[in-house]
Length: 259
Length: 259
Image 1 (cartoon, chains in turn orange, cyan):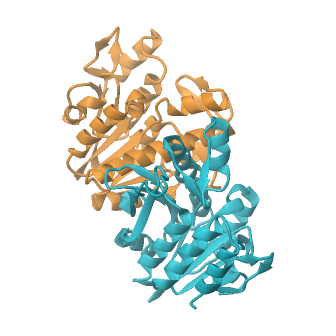
Image 2 (cartoon, one colour):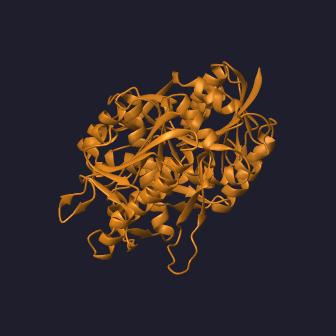
Image 3 (cartoon, helix red, strand yellow):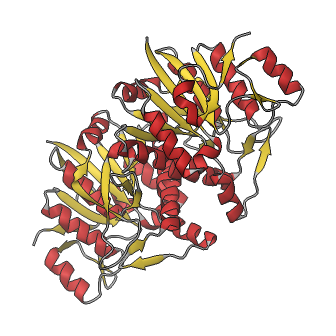
């Protein structure tokens, strides 16, 4: 099978124009089919503040009311997605900016309101991925740039965790490709007392989580990573966006391993 | 040649959830390849107000500073584009939401700052249209839903008049298709003293414009319409979004005619 590289870019890199442009320059160097999933950085939070919309979070996941849905959709699928896509195309890397609603590439189901009502939040599962259409773009050497906004079967837009989007896409596409999945952001990987862990397995993750050594946004990221590894993704790394070309070679960050 | 229907939807319809859903229900009934270009309605203006960003207009065209670019991109390419696309897909009409930056389908050139500095505004010309990619979507029975945001060759996003986007797309695609172009909004067509004009030619337009009987947003709409007619688009109508299925049959609005 062909190799496919899926990069999730998030965190402060998205907000830092210079770091983002540098990341894009490195991303373009990756050979073969590739796909980019992005988060939203702080911009959605800043816009919410300016508009007086209060942010609610639960264990690193945003609670999405109607105003927050509009804000996240505008920031993720509008500004960030189109900026990244325009920069990729300008540098000669054909790219198309999509969200889950486009061609129903990622249909989702609104999350149950119990035990916590996350509002307009959608969960995606592997069977809801339009692999055929994504494969067409990949075969045409087109990079899909994917914003973490999805829609349900009624056409309701839903906010979706970007780490989950990357994980589910990697899992679905691992049927047709040998998939490398890299989560990158502004840290060097998974840290324990500021020390980089070169590898982490699920047992270690559970122990660190129990001792509150791993918190907030890193929890869903690792949950998603272990899920993808379990379901057949070949190689998963977490690391700094500046090291993307090392990370895809399996070093320079934290490697997710089986027990 | 095959027929292609290009609809530009704009004005108050975009802001009216019920009218928009009704429009989408009618749009889906159009047979054969079709493409939808949308404007932004009042939402960008409302968001600008909330954020304290002052709106500047010149003859129906928005002047776009850096903040306004961000707002229009978020509203047009984010919220409106993805909502329409999600609704189309949910109703069984495969659709993909795009802006000009995606696959460089509509590259633009930043407008000269003389005689008026419109800021981050891009002008598109026919040769900058990626006809090959758009034709692929059309042949696959996929409806491109296009937001009027474009980018230049450096990857700078630019705000672009949606009527012009529709006109230039119609012109470019008229090489491969018999194109019907319909501009629709919340009015019945081109009005003269509240009376609907069933047809209008360029001489009549110039006379009405001179007497200030046609003003504001209708001026660029008609400029674009006459330009498209001149350059080979088969049939151009302006009318109410509720009458879309009549308009494509050449009645129920204002028909643009040659002198």
